[in-house]
Length: 133
Figure: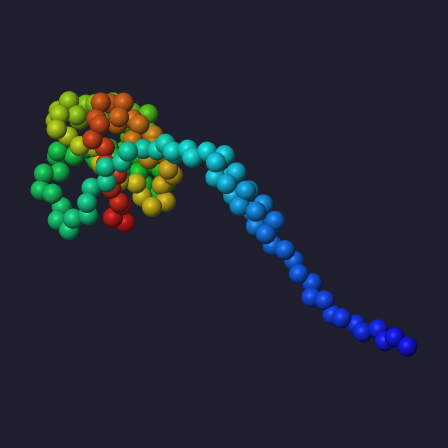
């Protein structure tokens, strides 16, 4: 009588086709990906210094507090009148630099609007400084 012996066969999974597909998909996604350069604002951030400059009259300071109120040289103004104030102060001192100092809780929209108003006033040296609060 014949005895049947059970031969255990190891199940093998061939990984080569799967790896080929993965590499082809990787190449496809790399080739078809569109690399877009995000546009943004060019900001001149002043270096942190422990000393306060002696001549603050050269700077035009635009402050934005946590309630999104705008102050130009410590005077409260409306955001739409920032341009006129910056034009007037820049006419008095053509070497003036605009420094925008937003509070930590200020909306980014107000900072960008103040930045745009200063640029429309003809001042291109605009810096954003960290609030001292």
